[in-house]
Length: 314
Length: 271
Image 1 (spheres, each protein chain N blue to C red):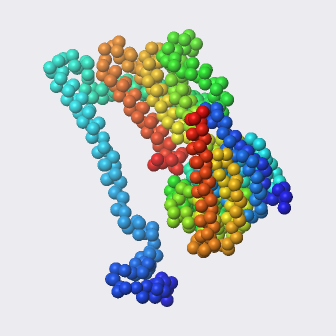
Image 2 (image 1 turned 120 degrees about the vertical axis):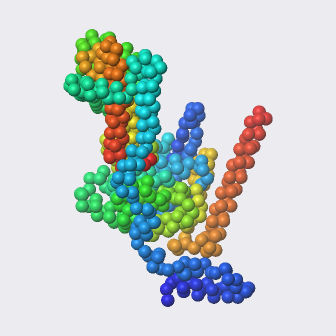
Image 3 (image 1 turned 45 degrees about the vertical axis):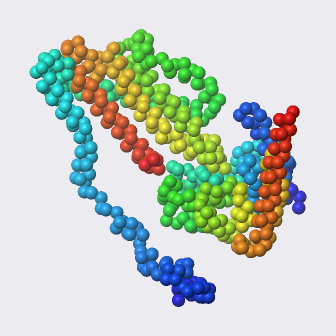
């Protein structure tokens, strides 16, 4: 006799003197005893798997991902149509807003002359160098400021004094310091990216859950271990946010820097096209910056996902 | 037995908190008690009675304004693994798996690798989390998270296990189940436990002795021994009577406090 049925016998014995038994008045545990034990003991994982629909085949997923771009397609097609038929009404439109096909042929044109890739790589190199340097310097500074109130109170006034000065205001002075070239532009982008990275790292380290810090200390962590095992991982999501913002602002500063003084790059390309009245080149430069920014941000998000599996999905 | 021979001694401890407006507040006044080796000691009282402050002092997160706290004769000056804490909100490291969380204190102790693995394995089994070692805390239920937290604290083999309302965030069924589990673990591997709770039923179910605190100023009013054999039947007449007595006493305290406050308030208005 299994324990479930013996419980029923015992409790129905108690219930016997009660008034006429109703059909639905079963003693506690009756329902469970009636159920098939085999179902209860079935492999739960297999059961769960059998309830979930199978994942769609790869081509299906690729298709669904592509189909999410419909708004972008509508946007490009509308742009093409407006440019093409609009210029029939107003000939100026051909220069004011060249169609996407003109941008594509401009790209082919510049690529054939071998300058397009140089512009792209020069700009990309400057942004990555500058944001890389801003990360290397800004993250430790921000973490230290977030961790130590005393350090923060000393550094904060200096930082908040420099921060409101727009990076563009540094251009004349930076040309005097570094001349016209990569270093000067990298410096401008660095200034733009540095502050969001510092401030986000600072907030990340400062807002670490007190209970996690206490848990670490009460489990025997030294200050250094606490920093490495609690403060840093807790601040990591915000550090990544800071770097992403830094990258975005970096692109803005890049174009501004290259517009004023540069021997190459997408900003230079745009400015050069302005003097030549080539609006198709201008648009090409803008489109490329947008695409590069999007790609870098997607890369950063992928990196976030890979380095913080525990954070994914939040 | 003198205070120094006890496992934990709290000697005339007072704590003043300074409020945001700069007003000093007496959180604890002249608290004195001892906890014996392997004793299960609970601290109960209404919110604001200073029981969490008392636990923070024992953990070393805060320093007393006056008085001394000792564990094994040694003065408590800072947090450390000898007094591992289980928090109400678990405080698990979200970036570590269950196994890594339990291993955290063992790594800090620089134990040999295979020793760490053996201990983690033992406590994973003890708290019934086998099969969940590689999960992250956010994938677990509240009850399971608190098991990880208990395993993590026990793994460092603390002199005293400090527990700050560990089951208050759990639903009632899980809470009762976790109480039973904690008792089983404690009976299998005896340990000095200081357990803060606002639930008298919980304290009487678990403890050897209970310190009953009262607020304004936070103080220990009474230390009650609970002599019934474990597991304690909540319907046992003795247990029922004890619970009723303590509750009645606490209600009276609350009434008197409110009454006094009302009178003080009225006197203030009159003046």
